[in-house]
Length: 259
Image (cartoon, rainbow, N blue to C red; front, side):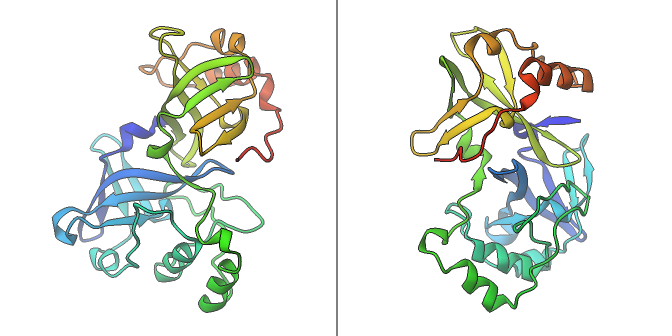
């Protein structure tokens, strides 16, 4: 099932011995558009500290009561590496988290296809911690993970077709089993009043992080005539197939799209 990112904001994160806090936002990597971390605001018990929780830790999702149940204890979270989530997350920080919990790493020569409660991630870091951190820190341009992005930060980015403006990002639709962003929800504004459209990340041709603009490999007419998106109706396989067919099967090349 597809779920809106905004609908998951505020979900409680339950530890094995109590509540950790509430989901504030999500980090995903812009190469596979897979959710890598939930940013959790802990509240009073940990002085409002924000912590990163991997979807790998989520063992059960109670959608009705808005609870993610994690296989962590509050003490584990309390003693976890202190990371400033308001700043870019470095690979060194990710390795420290990976070694502490430990969580399997997702970087390397493959892609993670796992999701909430699914262990489909890659093998843990095999190098000794000090060596792994040193390897990742060799290049001054790799002090932080350049592909780790915040869903909150991308909300509001303007979307441009090959021949004109479309609108701006309003939300994201994720597959609840794989925790992967399948669609971007675009508010068309005055161009198509009252209409929201969906675009697959596979259509993205270029992302300009400096100007907060995204260029998609589709025409204005394609977007205008795309299958209608009704937020109140569950998205079934038939809709996904028709959407994919409308845009040519998402066969566009999108290498080197990040600027």
